[in-house]
Image (tube, rainbow, N blue to C red; front, side, top):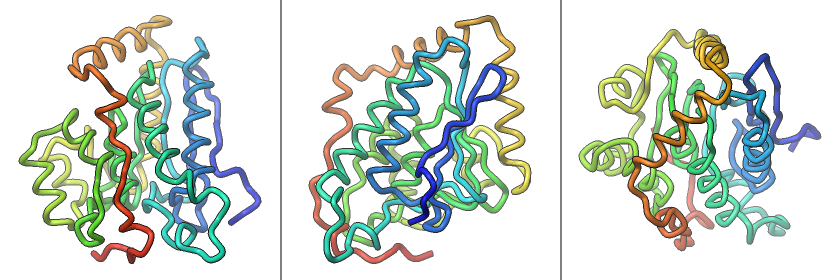
Length: 243
């Protein structure tokens, strides 16, 4: 692991970027990263000068999912017992976050990385970027992916993604209604920033009002129960998913 912080906040004029910053591990998830994103969201939620957030990964990768190499290491990492609790806390924070989140899907979002992408209010994907909900290959559960599919899509689309467990690229993601736009691979972050700047140009508080209206229409009475704690030990011995 690099000496860099696993999560960076980059403030712009009226908006901000949250950057997953573990490029040497393709921005895979460990508790220091998921806790870092949650704390960044908490900080930006209270900042009246921030109208929206762009969520992206460092070095042109979005997120490769849970860092299985780190999770399965011997001796166990000190955060091992926090892996799944930290991940659930982040998704609850994303659910309640009162401002739009624009996701930059570059290269891929795999398993937990897919759930993180689906949590975004608008997702911009590259032509060859893909989502892969591949837990079926590992015998693992997919509570966060399932929760966001329930909110954002249909059971048919969820079943297609989760039971096939394959790579689904930008154009097909657009057809399925899982992303807002499909653009050239090298234009993803630029397009996200254009959208963020447009939102930042609206009246103060306008984007927050819209986001809160969206949240209120989800019909989730108890988010704490809706985002279920993973209870499968499969990832403790699972291999990486295949293409």
